Length: 162
Image 1 (cartoon, rainbow, N blue to C red):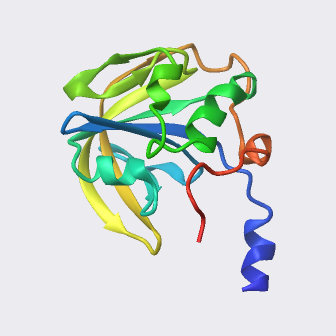
Image 2 (tube, rainbow, N blue to C red; image 1 turned 45 degrees about the horizontal axis):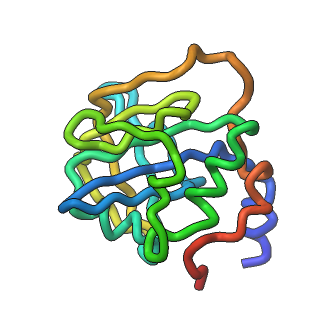
């Protein structure tokens, strides 16, 4: 495993906040495993930890919202990465609105999209949600860099990491 740690130690992925809503519940978490996964049709995949409350809400949701943050939005990343919805309502601390299909869209995100869940795929301790984008918005690209893993290393996870 040490060799794989040497490989993954080089990675510094963009971080995003994924939100879900289903059955009157909302969830949201900071995610480092996410990427566009198809060109035609455009698809995006986000990987949610099975121990995360957001996963429990997302597995019942028809749509998810994916939000990009900039380094100056570290506080927003802290809300969704350093706290758990099992103990508090994270959404009471941030501005949000309802988007397509009842998705929870964060008002202050640099960019965001809502995607219909077209596939859920197991991948170890995370489940991949493949999304078909149906609504999007945000600032124009190029207005600064995105929040990266190295920017968020000081955030202690709000749920237990086993």
